[in-house]
Each structure stands twice: as C-alpha cells, then as structure tokens.
Length: 329
Image 1 (cartoon, rainbow, N blue to C red):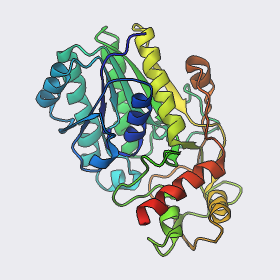
Image 2 (image 1 turned 60 degrees about the vertical axis):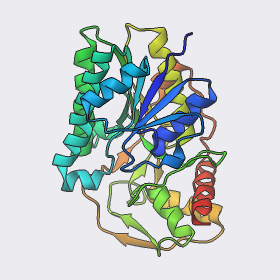
Image 3 (image 1 turned 90 degrees about the horizontal axis):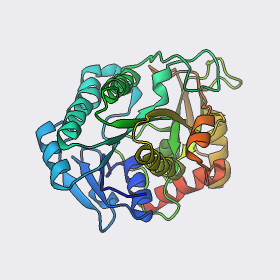
Image 4 (image 1 turned 30 degrees about the vertical axis):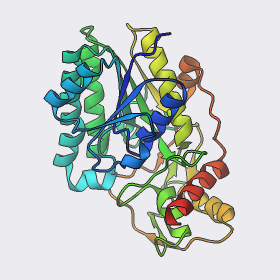
C-alpha cells in the first residue's frame, strides 16, 4: 500500500501527538498543523514538520495541503472540555464545527481524498443501554457532543458526492501516556479524571474532585470506558490504511475496550499503583456528564483487525503516573 503524506491537525496536542508518533514509527511522512493554543512544540518529534497555523483558516490550510502534496488528513484539532462547552457553546461550535468546515473546504480545494476525524462518545448523549454500538441513537446532551456530531454529518453528506472518503472514530475516555515517555497529557486546566488525579498524586494539586456520587450506578459515580492513548493511536493508523485501501468506503467506529470503570474504582486503582492514597473531595454533579458510557468495539476489531496492547487498567495508570512524575521533576 502506498503511503501518501499525512497532515495531522492538532498534532502537537495530547491524542494528536500520539497519533503522530504511531505514524512516524510506521514510516509515514507526517506534517503537523497546530496553532499551539493547547499543543506544545516539544510534543512534535524530530523529523516531523510543524506548521503553526489555525485550522479554521481555510485559505492557509489549502496552501499547506497543496504545497506538501498531502493525500490524507487526520483531524484532531478542536476543543474537548464538556463543562466549558456548556458555559461557552458559541466558542465550541466555532472552534469545532466551523473550523472543521473550513478544513474540509481546503481539503476539497487541494484534492485530498481521505479524512480521518476525531469524534467522541459524547455524540450518544446519555444512552438507555450499554455497551453502546454504532447504531445507538445519537442524542448529545452537551454542545461538545453536538459540535462533533454536526461535523460527522457534514463529512457524511460531502463524502456521498464522491469528494473523499472518511472515517469517524468515536473515542470513549482516553487516558495514559506513551510507554516510552515521548508524549503525554499536558494541556492547560486539565479536566480528565486520571490526569487530574495523577497531578494530585505528585503534589501539583491538593486533591481530586469527584463530581457526583448519586448517579444510577453501583457506587453512585460515573462509569467510563478508559482506553490507553497509544492503543487509540494504533487504531488511527489502521483506520487510515483502511481508508486508502477502500477509497469508496467510509465508516464510523467506536474506540474503547468494552468495559466500564467507575470514578471511585479508577481512583482506588490509582491509590494502589501510586502506593499511597490520593485525597478526594466529593462534590455535586458536573453539567453535561452522562452516568455511563461503555463501548461496543466489535466493529473496530472486525474491520481494522485492531488488537490493544495496553488495556490493563494498572498499565494505563502507571503510564500516566510516570508521565506526570517526569513533568513534575
């Protein structure tokens, strides 16, 4: 299979940088487009070009794509904090949906034939049953989920004209860090449970907040399907290969392990791996959080032949904790 140059938007951010590492390790030529509003220049490995540009600038993106003869795009750039989307929905629709519209227009202008989109389980809202498969009704309960679902719909409609094919990967809860220590989560004002808890474990925070203890779950806290970021990155490489091998086919796939872990269960596991308890403060529910999100990953496994390597919960936690200790040092 030929390997066309790949543009990774948001490739200096958390998930995007791990996808860049996976592509680079597999011998792809990669170009990163990132405005560094949340990403870090240091996250882009040596030998990978970084273009500092806003993905929402369609004219600039069209030039980047054409000048580098880009054949495929992995689109990670965007905003991902659910409570922030509730408090500032206008920003989320602009930074996620409108910017994606500009990028797709630039891709069409430059003749890019394959687009892989970073979507989310938030498109499902608060589903009635779990595990969630790709046929579960999409009923977002926050602007973040809607901003991603609108982009999925746009891709679906435009792909139907033959302009390109696309894959939408709906992530569940991404956690952990590169096992080799090359990248991890740094973002300003982190809200992901494991990231926040690891910051508390190394002394960056006094405690970890638990948002809601009265959900309809066994221990009253939210249940999530945590997937190691490097396993997610490997799914992206396989998905890109599938898009190129079957240029008339598009797909939407869930990315998770198919198992649920509650907030308290994850914190108990962190205490064990850390060798010391991390202080917790119980509080009220946070706006926009569904009680339970657990993936069915059957289609991901069947279509891509994906086999996770880092699915053990302690492995996920250890990689995140090692990364946080490195940052703290």
